[in-house]
Image 1: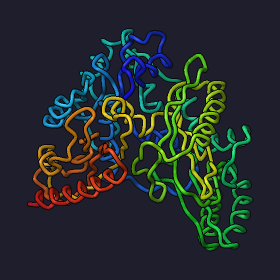
Image 2: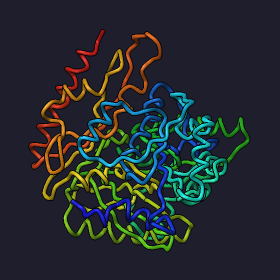
Image 3: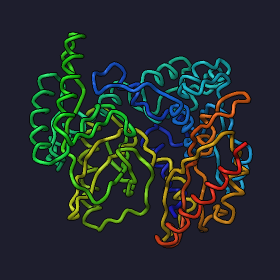
Image 4: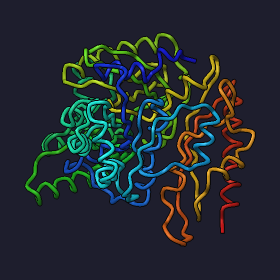
Length: 461
């Protein structure tokens, strides 16, 4: 376990702020890519559904990142029993600032902007605290401007630029880093050339993937293993360009390569261009969608050293382009143990960022952990007490112990219909599962999933 004086949040404040004594106002505006990518001509967009209500309640993750001198902005009050549970664990929570006007399908930032009382409270913090969002878009800049509270982050323009997958690929090319074969498409002409190259790969039995430059969590991702599907995509893009008269694009096409594991590593770039390598974790993904992390990553010293060196090179480039703050990079291990050290750069907080403070407090030396989400299918809201009772003796009870630490409870009931409706809805329970061996970790994970299934059955009307 890491000493408090060298905690991640202490290092973060040193990187972002002139004074480490300045409180941060944490803002979990997840999937900020939706704002960065607005209006970008990429793959066909799918209308948002009830799932965005769950994503918007991921704002509760930020509650477990700050300390007692900090603040966190939330869409709603946390479950009281969940707060009691965290208190019993000794988790030092930040001061809660809750929006008074909310909409499930609106981001936490837009909820705060629609809440005059909360805006007044933030204005009272101007000059004494700094706003630290998950990522910075025009919405967060508007919030800072309307309250007078400073942003502990670069401008939205800088953040948007460095978070494009096109930027990731171009920077990796410039640094000579290994990447899957692929092509950036910023014009229709570049796209047609990339489709032709991709079609040759598919015809030879390979697979390619088309990506939106600002896609996130599996959105804006199309895997193609049949030539006809790639041709249909080409025709769709050309028809859209003819209708709009817009020849600009924001896409990539890459070869889908064999891999043994997905990785996520993080480093922090200081305002002075310093770079600190924070960690590397093994990412769990399904069809491009993030599902969790395994800690520690199953890597050898050579592989970790390579990633550390790449982080230093990437950090220097990002600093030169005006960025500072947290950077998460997706990477892959090939079947022979070689690395693809840059799949994409996420110059913002990442899911793994929100686990660090909990790791420092609860993960003993030699322990293993799994950060994951448990999908829930419900017909009425499930209180934290029911989850606590269902998980029973496998719920984490203290530092140095084993069990499940619930990391976000708001996402469980975020999509519940209002009123007396009993329509089924989907929720997610996020947790950090800690064990002393990988075998015990997997056994606990399976048993917790079984117990939660029983809790869902008990919640049916």
